[in-house]
Length: 459
Image 1 (cartoon, rainbow, N blue to C red):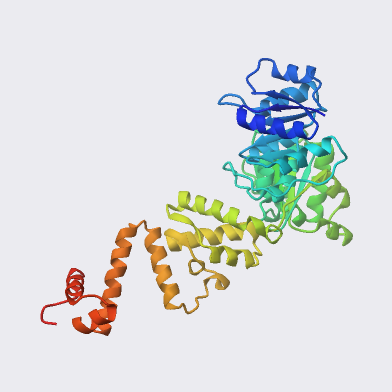
Image 2 (cartoon, rainbow, N blue to C red):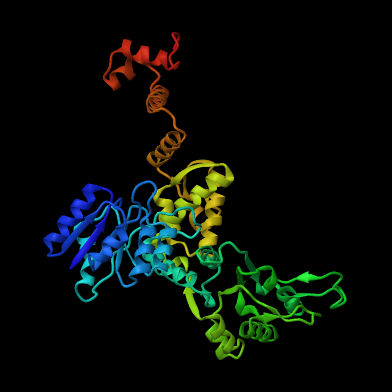
Protein backbone atom coordinates (compact mmCIF):
# COMPACT_ATOMS: atom_id res chain seq x y z
CA UNK A 1 0.00 0.00 0.00
CA UNK A 2 1.27 3.49 -0.82
CA UNK A 3 1.40 5.50 2.40
CA UNK A 4 2.39 9.15 2.91
CA UNK A 5 3.67 10.37 6.26
CA UNK A 6 3.70 14.09 7.08
CA UNK A 7 5.82 14.71 10.19
CA UNK A 8 8.15 17.64 10.90
CA UNK A 9 10.34 15.60 13.30
CA UNK A 10 12.85 13.71 11.15
CA UNK A 11 13.52 10.95 13.70
CA UNK A 12 9.83 10.04 14.01
CA UNK A 13 9.36 10.24 10.24
CA UNK A 14 12.34 7.91 9.75
CA UNK A 15 11.14 5.40 12.38
CA UNK A 16 7.62 5.18 10.96
CA UNK A 17 8.94 4.86 7.41
CA UNK A 18 11.30 2.07 8.45
CA UNK A 19 8.55 0.10 10.20
CA UNK A 20 6.09 0.42 7.32
CA UNK A 21 8.67 -0.52 4.67
CA UNK A 22 9.61 -3.57 6.71
CA UNK A 23 5.98 -4.68 6.43
CA UNK A 24 5.88 -4.27 2.66
CA UNK A 25 4.42 -0.78 2.27
CA UNK A 26 5.61 1.94 -0.10
CA UNK A 27 6.23 5.09 1.94
CA UNK A 28 6.58 8.73 0.89
CA UNK A 29 7.81 11.12 3.59
CA UNK A 30 7.13 14.87 3.96
CA UNK A 31 8.17 17.32 6.66
CA UNK A 32 5.04 19.47 6.23
CA UNK A 33 6.77 22.56 4.85
CA UNK A 34 6.59 21.56 1.18
CA UNK A 35 4.66 23.91 -1.12
CA UNK A 36 1.29 22.67 -2.45
CA UNK A 37 1.58 19.61 -0.25
CA UNK A 38 -2.08 18.64 -0.58
CA UNK A 39 -1.86 18.53 -4.37
CA UNK A 40 1.39 16.56 -4.19
CA UNK A 41 -0.19 13.91 -1.96
CA UNK A 42 -3.22 13.58 -4.22
CA UNK A 43 -1.17 13.39 -7.43
CA UNK A 44 1.00 10.70 -5.83
CA UNK A 45 -2.16 8.54 -5.54
CA UNK A 46 -1.57 7.93 -1.85
CA UNK A 47 -3.85 5.28 -0.34
CA UNK A 48 -3.33 6.23 3.32
CA UNK A 49 -2.03 9.38 5.01
CA UNK A 50 -0.37 9.44 8.44
CA UNK A 51 -0.48 13.07 9.52
CA UNK A 52 1.04 14.84 12.54
CA UNK A 53 -1.34 17.39 14.07
CA UNK A 54 1.32 19.97 14.90
CA UNK A 55 3.59 20.71 11.95
CA UNK A 56 5.81 23.51 13.19
CA UNK A 57 4.72 26.71 14.91
CA UNK A 58 2.29 28.11 12.35
CA UNK A 59 1.04 25.02 10.52
CA UNK A 60 -1.69 22.71 11.78
CA UNK A 61 -2.21 19.21 10.42
CA UNK A 62 -5.99 19.61 10.82
CA UNK A 63 -5.90 22.40 8.21
CA UNK A 64 -4.02 20.14 5.79
CA UNK A 65 -6.57 17.38 6.44
CA UNK A 66 -9.42 19.79 5.62
CA UNK A 67 -7.72 20.78 2.38
CA UNK A 68 -7.17 17.16 1.42
CA UNK A 69 -10.73 16.14 2.28
CA UNK A 70 -12.10 18.93 0.08
CA UNK A 71 -10.20 17.48 -2.88
CA UNK A 72 -10.38 13.78 -2.03
CA UNK A 73 -12.99 12.93 0.58
CA UNK A 74 -12.19 9.20 0.37
CA UNK A 75 -8.55 9.50 1.46
CA UNK A 76 -8.18 7.72 4.83
CA UNK A 77 -6.17 9.66 7.41
CA UNK A 78 -4.52 8.63 10.66
CA UNK A 79 -3.78 11.59 12.91
CA UNK A 80 -0.58 11.44 14.94
CA UNK A 81 -0.24 13.69 18.00
CA UNK A 82 1.26 14.01 21.47
CA UNK A 83 -1.87 15.83 22.68
CA UNK A 84 -5.22 14.22 21.91
CA UNK A 85 -7.30 17.24 22.94
CA UNK A 86 -11.07 17.49 22.81
CA UNK A 87 -10.78 20.10 20.05
CA UNK A 88 -8.55 17.83 17.93
CA UNK A 89 -10.90 14.88 18.42
CA UNK A 90 -13.99 16.88 17.46
CA UNK A 91 -12.37 18.50 14.43
CA UNK A 92 -11.11 15.09 13.32
CA UNK A 93 -14.59 13.59 13.72
CA UNK A 94 -16.12 16.38 11.62
CA UNK A 95 -13.69 15.41 8.84
CA UNK A 96 -14.56 11.73 9.18
CA UNK A 97 -11.22 10.87 10.81
CA UNK A 98 -11.53 8.30 13.58
CA UNK A 99 -7.99 6.96 13.97
CA UNK A 100 -5.70 8.85 16.35
CA UNK A 101 -2.15 7.64 17.05
CA UNK A 102 -0.95 9.14 20.33
CA UNK A 103 2.77 9.77 20.79
CA UNK A 104 4.86 8.09 21.98
CA UNK A 105 3.82 4.88 20.24
CA UNK A 106 5.37 1.52 19.42
CA UNK A 107 5.40 -0.60 16.27
CA UNK A 108 2.40 -2.65 17.35
CA UNK A 109 0.22 0.45 17.91
CA UNK A 110 1.17 1.86 14.51
CA UNK A 111 0.46 -1.38 12.62
CA UNK A 112 -2.79 -1.89 14.49
CA UNK A 113 -4.11 1.26 12.82
CA UNK A 114 -2.46 0.81 9.45
CA UNK A 115 -3.27 -2.88 8.82
CA UNK A 116 -7.07 -2.50 8.56
CA UNK A 117 -6.60 -0.29 5.50
CA UNK A 118 -4.71 -3.02 3.65
CA UNK A 119 -6.67 -5.95 5.11
CA UNK A 120 -10.16 -6.45 6.46
CA UNK A 121 -10.89 -4.37 9.58
CA UNK A 122 -9.78 -6.25 12.68
CA UNK A 123 -9.49 -4.73 16.13
CA UNK A 124 -9.61 -1.17 17.46
CA UNK A 125 -6.79 0.53 19.33
CA UNK A 126 -6.30 0.20 23.07
CA UNK A 127 -7.41 2.78 25.59
CA UNK A 128 -5.27 5.87 25.91
CA UNK A 129 -5.61 8.99 27.98
CA UNK A 130 -6.83 12.20 26.43
CA UNK A 131 -4.92 15.32 27.44
CA UNK A 132 -7.50 17.91 28.31
CA UNK A 133 -7.15 21.34 26.68
CA UNK A 134 -9.31 23.23 29.13
CA UNK A 135 -12.69 21.73 28.25
CA UNK A 136 -14.82 20.68 31.19
CA UNK A 137 -15.67 17.31 29.63
CA UNK A 138 -12.63 15.10 30.22
CA UNK A 139 -11.81 11.41 30.45
CA UNK A 140 -9.81 8.54 29.03
CA UNK A 141 -9.60 7.90 25.30
CA UNK A 142 -11.68 4.73 25.53
CA UNK A 143 -14.47 6.63 27.31
CA UNK A 144 -14.43 9.72 25.19
CA UNK A 145 -13.69 8.57 21.64
CA UNK A 146 -17.30 7.64 20.76
CA UNK A 147 -18.72 10.73 22.48
CA UNK A 148 -16.34 13.05 20.62
CA UNK A 149 -17.04 11.24 17.35
CA UNK A 150 -20.78 11.80 17.75
CA UNK A 151 -20.26 15.41 18.88
CA UNK A 152 -18.35 15.91 15.63
CA UNK A 153 -21.19 14.35 13.62
CA UNK A 154 -23.77 16.52 15.39
CA UNK A 155 -21.70 19.68 14.95
CA UNK A 156 -21.44 19.03 11.23
CA UNK A 157 -25.21 19.16 10.58
CA UNK A 158 -28.43 20.64 11.94
CA UNK A 159 -30.26 17.47 12.95
CA UNK A 160 -32.06 17.54 16.28
CA UNK A 161 -29.92 15.83 18.93
CA UNK A 162 -31.13 14.02 22.05
CA UNK A 163 -28.57 13.43 24.81
CA UNK A 164 -29.35 10.60 27.24
CA UNK A 165 -27.71 10.26 30.63
CA UNK A 166 -28.15 10.22 34.38
CA UNK A 167 -28.10 13.40 36.45
CA UNK A 168 -24.61 14.88 36.67
CA UNK A 169 -23.08 13.12 33.66
CA UNK A 170 -22.35 16.30 31.72
CA UNK A 171 -25.23 16.44 29.23
CA UNK A 172 -25.21 20.24 29.03
CA UNK A 173 -21.45 20.19 28.48
CA UNK A 174 -21.96 17.87 25.50
CA UNK A 175 -24.64 20.20 24.13
CA UNK A 176 -22.32 23.19 24.56
CA UNK A 177 -19.51 21.37 22.73
CA UNK A 178 -21.84 20.60 19.82
CA UNK A 179 -22.72 24.29 19.62
CA UNK A 180 -19.12 25.48 20.00
CA UNK A 181 -17.90 23.28 17.16
CA UNK A 182 -20.78 24.00 14.77
CA UNK A 183 -21.26 26.83 12.27
CA UNK A 184 -23.61 28.35 14.87
CA UNK A 185 -20.83 28.99 17.40
CA UNK A 186 -20.94 32.78 16.96
CA UNK A 187 -24.64 32.82 17.88
CA UNK A 188 -26.23 32.32 21.35
CA UNK A 189 -26.38 29.04 23.26
CA UNK A 190 -29.46 29.14 25.50
CA UNK A 191 -30.17 26.38 28.03
CA UNK A 192 -33.74 25.89 29.23
CA UNK A 193 -34.73 23.64 32.15
CA UNK A 194 -38.07 22.24 31.00
CA UNK A 195 -38.85 20.83 34.44
CA UNK A 196 -38.70 24.32 35.97
CA UNK A 197 -41.30 25.91 33.64
CA UNK A 198 -44.94 25.69 34.85
CA UNK A 199 -47.27 24.47 32.12
CA UNK A 200 -49.23 27.75 32.14
CA UNK A 201 -46.00 29.66 31.34
CA UNK A 202 -44.53 27.22 28.82
CA UNK A 203 -45.65 29.05 25.67
CA UNK A 204 -44.80 32.45 27.10
CA UNK A 205 -41.29 31.38 28.14
CA UNK A 206 -40.51 29.49 24.94
CA UNK A 207 -42.23 31.69 22.35
CA UNK A 208 -42.67 35.02 24.17
CA UNK A 209 -45.79 37.15 24.60
CA UNK A 210 -47.18 40.53 23.58
CA UNK A 211 -48.05 43.27 26.04
CA UNK A 212 -51.52 42.65 27.48
CA UNK A 213 -51.67 39.06 26.26
CA UNK A 214 -52.73 38.01 29.77
CA UNK A 215 -53.26 39.62 33.18
CA UNK A 216 -49.61 39.92 34.22
CA UNK A 217 -48.26 40.72 30.75
CA UNK A 218 -47.38 44.36 31.42
CA UNK A 219 -44.80 44.45 28.65
CA UNK A 220 -43.69 42.51 25.61
CA UNK A 221 -41.50 39.45 26.32
CA UNK A 222 -39.12 37.86 23.81
CA UNK A 223 -39.11 34.06 24.24
CA UNK A 224 -36.17 31.67 24.14
CA UNK A 225 -36.92 30.57 20.55
CA UNK A 226 -36.52 34.17 19.40
CA UNK A 227 -33.62 35.05 21.71
CA UNK A 228 -31.49 32.20 20.36
CA UNK A 229 -31.57 33.56 16.82
CA UNK A 230 -29.39 31.27 14.67
CA UNK A 231 -27.81 29.67 17.72
CA UNK A 232 -28.60 26.52 19.71
CA UNK A 233 -31.62 26.07 21.98
CA UNK A 234 -30.84 23.41 24.59
CA UNK A 235 -33.95 21.87 26.16
CA UNK A 236 -32.83 20.08 29.32
CA UNK A 237 -35.00 17.52 31.18
CA UNK A 238 -37.25 17.22 28.14
CA UNK A 239 -38.85 14.09 29.63
CA UNK A 240 -40.53 16.21 32.32
CA UNK A 241 -42.76 18.06 29.84
CA UNK A 242 -46.50 17.64 30.39
CA UNK A 243 -48.67 16.34 27.49
CA UNK A 244 -49.99 19.79 26.48
CA UNK A 245 -46.46 21.22 26.35
CA UNK A 246 -45.34 18.19 24.31
CA UNK A 247 -48.04 18.92 21.71
CA UNK A 248 -47.02 22.57 21.41
CA UNK A 249 -43.33 21.65 21.13
CA UNK A 250 -44.10 19.04 18.44
CA UNK A 251 -45.91 21.59 16.28
CA UNK A 252 -43.00 24.02 16.75
CA UNK A 253 -40.50 21.38 15.60
CA UNK A 254 -42.61 20.33 12.62
CA UNK A 255 -43.29 23.84 11.29
CA UNK A 256 -40.13 25.56 12.59
CA UNK A 257 -42.39 28.52 13.30
CA UNK A 258 -43.80 30.05 16.46
CA UNK A 259 -46.16 32.83 17.49
CA UNK A 260 -45.85 34.97 20.60
CA UNK A 261 -48.76 34.56 23.02
CA UNK A 262 -51.25 37.25 22.03
CA UNK A 263 -49.48 37.78 18.72
CA UNK A 264 -50.94 37.53 15.22
CA UNK A 265 -47.86 36.77 13.15
CA UNK A 266 -45.90 33.55 12.80
CA UNK A 267 -42.14 33.92 13.16
CA UNK A 268 -39.53 31.55 11.69
CA UNK A 269 -37.27 29.61 14.05
CA UNK A 270 -33.71 30.01 12.76
CA UNK A 271 -31.84 27.97 15.38
CA UNK A 272 -31.27 24.27 16.07
CA UNK A 273 -32.59 22.10 18.88
CA UNK A 274 -30.50 19.97 21.22
CA UNK A 275 -32.34 18.29 24.09
CA UNK A 276 -31.43 16.07 27.02
CA UNK A 277 -33.11 13.70 29.42
CA UNK A 278 -32.24 11.57 32.44
CA UNK A 279 -35.44 9.57 31.98
CA UNK A 280 -35.95 6.47 29.83
CA UNK A 281 -38.23 8.06 27.25
CA UNK A 282 -38.99 4.77 25.52
CA UNK A 283 -40.50 3.50 28.79
CA UNK A 284 -42.52 6.70 29.08
CA UNK A 285 -43.73 6.21 25.50
CA UNK A 286 -44.82 2.67 26.33
CA UNK A 287 -46.70 4.03 29.36
CA UNK A 288 -48.38 6.69 27.15
CA UNK A 289 -46.64 9.47 29.08
CA UNK A 290 -44.49 10.81 26.24
CA UNK A 291 -45.38 11.31 22.60
CA UNK A 292 -43.60 8.92 20.27
CA UNK A 293 -43.77 11.36 17.33
CA UNK A 294 -42.10 14.04 19.48
CA UNK A 295 -39.39 11.58 20.52
CA UNK A 296 -38.52 10.85 16.88
CA UNK A 297 -38.40 14.57 16.14
CA UNK A 298 -36.01 15.17 19.03
CA UNK A 299 -33.81 12.09 18.58
CA UNK A 300 -32.68 12.31 14.95
CA UNK A 301 -29.21 11.78 16.43
CA UNK A 302 -28.64 10.35 19.92
CA UNK A 303 -25.65 10.66 22.24
CA UNK A 304 -25.25 8.67 25.45
CA UNK A 305 -23.47 10.35 28.38
CA UNK A 306 -22.04 7.43 30.44
CA UNK A 307 -22.45 7.29 34.20
CA UNK A 308 -19.40 7.53 36.43
CA UNK A 309 -19.70 3.85 37.42
CA UNK A 310 -19.20 3.03 33.72
CA UNK A 311 -15.98 5.04 33.61
CA UNK A 312 -14.19 4.16 36.85
CA UNK A 313 -10.89 4.28 34.95
CA UNK A 314 -11.46 8.04 34.62
CA UNK A 315 -11.49 8.73 38.38
CA UNK A 316 -7.77 9.69 38.55
CA UNK A 317 -8.09 11.90 35.44
CA UNK A 318 -11.22 13.63 36.75
CA UNK A 319 -9.73 14.04 40.23
CA UNK A 320 -6.64 15.71 38.80
CA UNK A 321 -8.83 17.95 36.63
CA UNK A 322 -11.10 19.03 39.51
CA UNK A 323 -8.14 19.64 41.82
CA UNK A 324 -6.69 21.94 39.17
CA UNK A 325 -10.02 23.78 38.97
CA UNK A 326 -10.21 24.04 42.76
CA UNK A 327 -6.70 25.49 42.97
CA UNK A 328 -7.71 28.20 40.51
CA UNK A 329 -11.21 28.98 41.78
CA UNK A 330 -10.82 28.40 45.53
CA UNK A 331 -7.26 29.72 45.82
CA UNK A 332 -5.94 26.56 47.48
CA UNK A 333 -2.68 24.71 46.85
CA UNK A 334 -3.52 21.02 46.42
CA UNK A 335 -0.87 18.91 44.73
CA UNK A 336 -2.92 15.74 44.22
CA UNK A 337 -4.62 12.87 46.05
CA UNK A 338 -2.89 9.92 47.68
CA UNK A 339 -3.33 6.37 46.36
CA UNK A 340 -5.66 5.31 49.19
CA UNK A 341 -7.97 8.25 48.46
CA UNK A 342 -8.09 7.52 44.73
CA UNK A 343 -8.90 3.89 45.55
CA UNK A 344 -11.71 4.99 47.90
CA UNK A 345 -13.08 7.41 45.29
CA UNK A 346 -13.15 4.60 42.72
CA UNK A 347 -15.04 2.28 45.08
CA UNK A 348 -17.73 4.77 46.11
CA UNK A 349 -21.07 4.75 44.28
CA UNK A 350 -21.58 8.26 42.90
CA UNK A 351 -25.35 8.63 42.48
CA UNK A 352 -24.79 12.23 41.35
CA UNK A 353 -22.05 11.13 38.94
CA UNK A 354 -19.37 13.60 37.81
CA UNK A 355 -21.11 16.60 39.38
CA UNK A 356 -21.13 14.90 42.78
CA UNK A 357 -17.48 13.88 42.44
CA UNK A 358 -16.53 17.46 41.52
CA UNK A 359 -18.39 18.90 44.51
CA UNK A 360 -16.81 16.35 46.85
CA UNK A 361 -13.31 17.17 45.60
CA UNK A 362 -13.93 20.92 45.87
CA UNK A 363 -15.06 20.44 49.47
CA UNK A 364 -12.05 18.28 50.28
CA UNK A 365 -9.71 20.87 48.76
CA UNK A 366 -11.22 23.54 50.97
CA UNK A 367 -10.71 21.32 54.01
CA UNK A 368 -7.09 20.49 53.17
CA UNK A 369 -6.06 23.92 51.74
CA UNK A 370 -2.53 22.76 50.94
CA UNK A 371 -0.74 19.51 50.11
CA UNK A 372 -2.15 16.09 49.23
CA UNK A 373 -5.82 15.13 49.60
CA UNK A 374 -6.57 12.28 52.00
CA UNK A 375 -9.74 10.38 52.81
CA UNK A 376 -10.38 12.35 56.01
CA UNK A 377 -10.64 15.57 53.98
CA UNK A 378 -13.90 14.40 52.41
CA UNK A 379 -17.28 15.03 54.02
CA UNK A 380 -18.36 11.56 52.90
CA UNK A 381 -18.76 8.80 55.45
CA UNK A 382 -17.20 6.01 53.39
CA UNK A 383 -14.13 8.09 52.66
CA UNK A 384 -13.71 10.03 55.89
CA UNK A 385 -14.05 7.15 58.39
CA UNK A 386 -10.85 7.26 60.41
CA UNK A 387 -9.10 4.13 61.56
CA UNK A 388 -6.61 3.71 64.37
CA UNK A 389 -3.17 4.19 62.87
CA UNK A 390 0.01 2.50 64.02
CA UNK A 391 2.81 4.78 65.20
CA UNK A 392 4.63 4.06 61.92
CA UNK A 393 1.59 5.23 59.89
CA UNK A 394 1.19 8.31 62.07
CA UNK A 395 4.86 9.17 61.62
CA UNK A 396 4.54 8.63 57.86
CA UNK A 397 1.58 11.04 57.74
CA UNK A 398 3.50 13.69 59.65
CA UNK A 399 6.46 13.34 57.28
CA UNK A 400 4.20 13.58 54.24
CA UNK A 401 2.70 16.77 55.63
CA UNK A 402 6.17 18.22 56.12
CA UNK A 403 7.21 17.33 52.57
CA UNK A 404 3.93 18.67 51.13
CA UNK A 405 4.58 22.00 52.87
CA UNK A 406 7.96 22.09 51.06
CA UNK A 407 10.02 21.77 54.24
CA UNK A 408 13.71 21.23 53.48
CA UNK A 409 14.64 17.52 53.77
CA UNK A 410 17.73 18.34 55.83
CA UNK A 411 15.58 20.30 58.29
CA UNK A 412 13.14 17.36 58.53
CA UNK A 413 16.02 14.97 59.27
CA UNK A 414 17.45 17.28 61.94
CA UNK A 415 14.07 17.66 63.62
CA UNK A 416 13.55 13.89 63.61
CA UNK A 417 16.93 13.41 65.28
CA UNK A 418 16.03 15.90 67.99
CA UNK A 419 12.64 14.29 68.64
CA UNK A 420 14.12 10.82 68.74
CA UNK A 421 16.84 11.94 71.16
CA UNK A 422 14.28 13.60 73.46
CA UNK A 423 12.17 10.43 73.56
CA UNK A 424 15.28 8.38 74.35
CA UNK A 425 16.33 10.81 77.12
CA UNK A 426 12.82 10.82 78.65
CA UNK A 427 12.96 7.02 78.80
CA UNK A 428 16.54 6.92 80.23
CA UNK A 429 17.55 10.31 81.73
CA UNK A 430 21.09 9.24 82.58
CA UNK A 431 24.02 10.15 80.29
CA UNK A 432 26.15 7.13 81.20
CA UNK A 433 23.42 4.53 80.82
CA UNK A 434 21.96 6.11 77.66
CA UNK A 435 25.42 6.33 76.09
CA UNK A 436 25.97 2.63 76.77
CA UNK A 437 22.55 1.79 75.31
CA UNK A 438 23.26 3.82 72.17
CA UNK A 439 26.83 2.53 71.92
CA UNK A 440 28.33 6.02 71.84
CA UNK A 441 30.64 7.99 74.12
CA UNK A 442 29.36 10.08 77.03
CA UNK A 443 31.02 13.22 75.60
CA UNK A 444 29.37 12.79 72.17
CA UNK A 445 25.97 12.12 73.71
CA UNK A 446 26.25 15.07 76.09
CA UNK A 447 27.14 17.36 73.17
CA UNK A 448 24.15 16.16 71.13
CA UNK A 449 21.81 16.58 74.11
CA UNK A 450 23.04 20.13 74.67
CA UNK A 451 22.62 21.04 70.99
CA UNK A 452 19.05 19.75 71.14
CA UNK A 453 18.53 21.80 74.36
CA UNK A 454 17.60 18.64 76.22
CA UNK A 455 20.54 18.22 78.61
CA UNK A 456 21.23 20.48 81.59
CA UNK A 457 24.43 20.39 83.60
CA UNK A 458 22.56 19.71 86.81
CA UNK A 459 20.74 16.72 85.31
